[in-house]
Image (cartoon, rainbow, N blue to C red):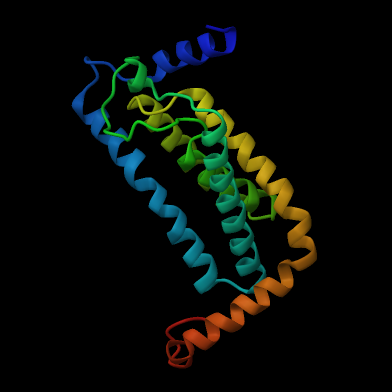
Length: 200
């Protein structure tokens, strides 16, 4: 075992729950690991439905960064399979999960991709809150035994690279893409927009 993997496992054991962990704490971690991710589509929908063109532009860019990051994760998993803790009988597992590659974490990649894009785009409050929520989810998924700490670090790196890839492309075509998306949205939802139920 190399030094990095040894450190990875050592930090995992510091975070991972045990048989002595209170049931209420396991319950909170399970709710966090499974459901906090749904804040992301709610946030993106709120930015689109209630935001101006600039906020909609930022929401679209954030979604693309997250999607590119998750896509990159699938390629990484094909090239290099890293087992989850329970696949090697390591630590304690409280959350059932498919025995697939753990690196990088898709959940953490989505949170990091959205958060970094929002922060980079000037939405510091939303970006900071998203980063905090992502950190809680990362803790929960390590605590419950389905991820290693390096899975989370790898996710942040993938998200940062995805942002670097998308940013220059978005600088060239982002405004045009946003305008077309807004036109499509206005056509599809013309009736509720006309009734004042949705922002134009």
